[in-house]
Length: 376
Image (cartoon, rainbow, N blue to C red; front, side):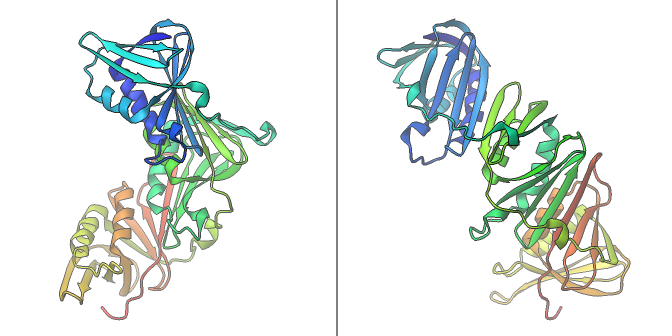
């Protein structure tokens, strides 16, 4: 078995596929890529049992066909340092010796038979599947806007992922850790189907990184897993079991007071004042008046404190409320509009954070629970 492929082209694919491989695997074979040569197409597969990513790459001078497994870390490290030129793989199918050559060098290693690699299980009936094709940008925007709000509490596994609430006219992405919640609705394309599932962090990150350059992706939602297919990649992953909380029920509808503030000015002030918070809780106190917000933080353990004032437009009377500085920074970093609208009711009720202008075909809403403030 033999084939030739440009080194940097191969490197871009194996580095993408390697994102699925865990640093420690229960099965040693999962430290390898599965290479399958069929005609002029080479497929490269990596898996951690729960997730499986396959890339397709055209090759030249192909002789024979078959499969073999090759050490992933060693191959990625080698290709990373190689100059951009054609390299030849020559595999002895009886001894599994692999020879990689290019005009200035020669590398030898031993592969494993391809039939030792775990086979993807598909025990689900197609009758329950739903399918749709959408722009990759629609999915990546949903992940970008919600990933930071995913929970990490093992006692609430349903919150350790991103909910995809798929409706015929739009996809709504939701994430929460009980302290903050993000709801992002995107109508860039209409799926034409209805369903829901919870994606863990790892699959969401793989989709975001690997499919970024793909124009569109075909999505197949099965009862326990999903498959994403583009012209170059196929990715399958398992869902998180369980039911996601009813997110619409926790979003308040009666917040009468509106605070409008410059996003960058407020973000910079929170970052500076946040240097002086007690790291145990990260509390920043806010005194909101009709024309300005005063931010205050202190750490009694080290006798440090700070305050700043930022201009604003507030429709209510004076209010004192507290929020976590790290959470505020995450929210204000995610919103892209120049100003942010914060809707409030009282210091014990959650605040709603909205961009003054949503991107085309999308709607973003963020919720943050306040912290108790005894005195300003």
